[in-house]
Length: 99
Image 1 (spheres, rainbow, N blue to C red):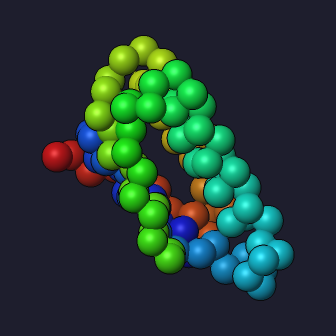
Image 2 (cartoon, helix red, strand yellow):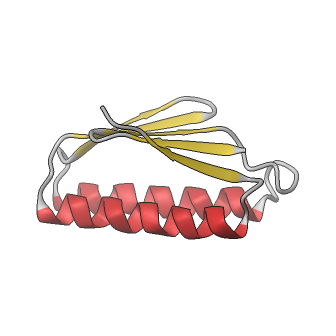
């Protein structure tokens, strides 16, 4: 399962969807595409808006700026991930936590 933990200044994405075998998992591919496209879009406007820390099964997005573009792209990314979580509740879980 992909577990997404959302905090005010930080989004952590851990795991694998396990919808299908590794490399052929459409849920994992969709979630990855949404996140990577969003991060790249933020970086194209301002390379300092977010920091991304990657490891084998974890991606952490640290939000450095809360300007209109960054906030809009983060909201859009989370909305897309929430739609995926609705369609694949056994494969994606989103948790919102207060900091």
